Length: 102
Image 1 (tube, rainbow, N blue to C red):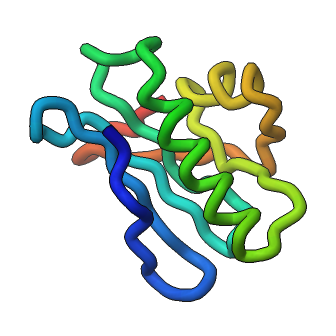
Image 2 (cartoon, one colour):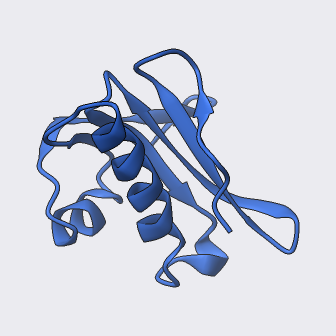
């Protein structure tokens, strides 16, 4: 289940996915047009949660007047986003301690 958008401000928001009351993913958007993050727990990868998260942000962006969306994509997320028709505008990297995650 995907949450209602959590508005950070008029141009940025986050949605979260839960399964059995536990968080299993989230996605964030800025400037009402750029998907910043899409993350789902590996146990539920390829089960539709990522698509649901993106659909929720897309609906919000369109309601706010956006005409297109782009993504800042990690190496892992890029194939998923491209399958859904997104175009990466920049490579996104995330660190965990001293390690950079793909």
